[in-house]
Length: 485
Image (cartoon, rainbow, N blue to C red; front, side):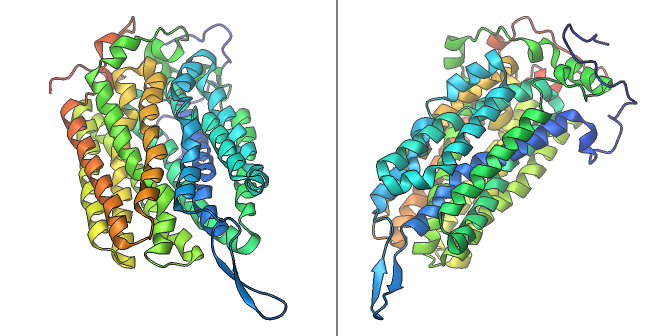
């Protein structure tokens, strides 16, 4: 048994809750943290994608009847496809700048603090967006860049939170619970934004979701602590389980990152390429899908919001199954960590390649929607691959590694909307086919690289002085084992 350290809160000495049913998540503080992170990512993506819906309303050409009966056409913001592409990509100009810095800062002052602060500032910026948008397009782009700067710390920081709260055999489960908030947030935001725009005006989209983000931040500060040893509501048995599984990795605040070793590591580059590939498809669809469905499939604004949300609803459901399944396979010992990461990641990319091509050839309301829903839905399995792989190969450097990979993975958010805006100018079905062909090719490239180069082993440069732990049954921890592939 590990004694409480100096300055730690005295945890509740209750009967073990580890044998209670898994659905009673509220009895395990690590799952309370995961649920709060879920709502954090809900806000992250609600704040990020609301512009994709609102810009359709902002630039829509409406028929307006004057007092004398004359019907004229009116457009609040006369932005062509090129300008819209720059506006939609502007968030990522800021987002790319704070990925590595966010990971470093999380190790210095705490991932939970920086994660919460990043979402809080983004929420406040969202609330003032309508005023700035009406002032000038330059101010709109500027505030979106600032939002990107503060939201850029979120993914690296949550890795720092996981490194202190998530036992190795529960990484997939806890991470996918949190990450699924991104997709639920996308679904709710797209559907609600469409109706808010119709009923209350496009400005209400920013007011509603910005306010929700501020409320979440207050709750996050109240409920979540940096580590289990600082949580006065955790039971002693849960604290010991987490500490015994993580060892000193979870509490080491004086980490020296081996920058050269990380930069020359093949498994690190496998994660980077995979993350880039997944985000290319993700950002292409999340920024352009509403426009595609309105312009090519001829859906009205309300239906556009609902149909655009379907792929992300599929992702939100499938990602839960993905995390549970990957951890179950690891726990049972059916596959090694490396095999689990490769199988889940590559199967997702292959499915996305096939269904994205299907969407390119089957350009009809039913066919395109079905293919895009399946493409995004099967992408959930990739998040049990590359997204938790940082914790496998270097748990104490995971927040910085996520910052590095997400820096490269942010490039599609900048480039993809601009390229799509340059390709889709008329718009025609043939132009959209080119967009889908490009996305399919990038998915396939990511599949090949990750399948050949990924690893689930802790890398030699990440060993440090951390001692290997054994679990309660005396079996070597799968997340830390040396594997022969």
